[in-house]
Each structure stands twice: as structure tokens, then as C-alpha cells.
Image 1 (cartoon, rainbow, N blue to C red):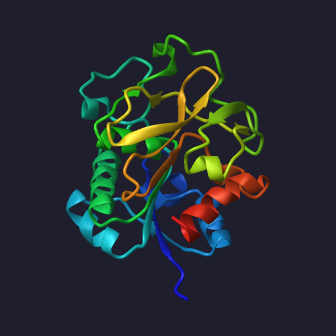
Image 2 (cartoon, rainbow, N blue to C red):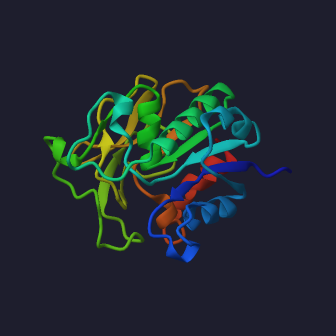
Length: 240
């Protein structure tokens, strides 16, 4: 039986690359590769490219995974940059937006993590809090540093009638590394998990014919120690 090919969109490292003679390099966290291997898939890292190549990339994979990384360029959802905005990569934003649109067009399943869920929301018409300080009800620590990523930080409430409702307990603990968050949810998406202060922690597509699952935490950092996080990879690779 052919193993599904999972396209993981790479990030690009631009700065302080003395070991690489100051040349940019493409990479993805090892946890995504290991999680997909363990789930029985074949990870294929997709280097950043021109948006015009999105259809060709999506044709060659069975499913698409978007990982974490930089903040999203705020002009993509009609805002000026807030003073607390972190590093951005418009090149990556535009490439990932094209891949998302093409994966939906070609009916390829999409799994997004942290920044990946944020660019998914922006691509489909939603927007973001550029920094959690802009969210009036912020009361939970969403950036767990300096706590090691293998430890869960805060609880989330999971909707029973959702993809995650079949994979996780109604209330569970997750790690967390983000200072931006989903604000107005894109119309094609529905929220399926929330932190105690009301931040959206996971989404899925309203249309069952468009397979999308997005989480705000980082299963790739803890999947070896926490079986429930590996279950996210297992579901995406084997059943989605």
C-alpha cells in the first residue's frame, strides 16, 4: 500500500548564518518529520518558492502541513504593523497562501500548526491579534518560555462534535508558543477548541468536503512524550 506523501512547507533562515557562510537555508523542525514517519507517512519538505508554483507542488503531494514560525504580515489583513509585531516574511506568507488555496482547489487535506493556523485564517478572510496585549480578556500565559516544550502549559476546552472531539479529551493540556492569535475567524472555518481566556486554539472547516484541521499549539515538540499529540499526526496521515 502506497504511503501518503505529506508536504511540509519549509521555513527559511535568513540571519546569523555564519556556519552557512551567511547564506539562507530552508528547514523544518525535526518533530514534524518524526511525527509523520511514526504515523506511516512520507514527509516531503517544500522549499519556499514562487506562488506560481503552488499548483505543481500540491499535485505532487497527498496532504499539506503548515508549520510555525514568523508573525503574519499585517497588511495581508488590512492593518498597519503594531509596535509589538515580531519578525515577518512576506515571501513565506504569499507562498503558503497560494499553497492553501491550491490544496483546497485540489481537495488535498490540510493540517496547520501555530503560525500555520494563523496564515490559514488570513488566507480564508479572517484576521489576527498582532499581539495578545490587544486582546482585552487575555489572562492565560500563551508563550511558555522558559518552560521546556515537552511540558504542557495551559488547558483547552474541546468541542465534542468536532475532529478533535474524537481525538482529545473534552479538557486537556497543551504547550503554547505564540503571541499572535486568531481574532475574527474566517467564514469557512469554525472554532473547535479554546483556552480558558477565550483564545481560539483549534479550527476545522465548516464544509466536510474540505478537510482542514488547525491547532494553535505545537504537537511536533511533544509527540514522543505525549501519545495524544502523536494521535494528531496519526489521524492526519492515516484517516484525514
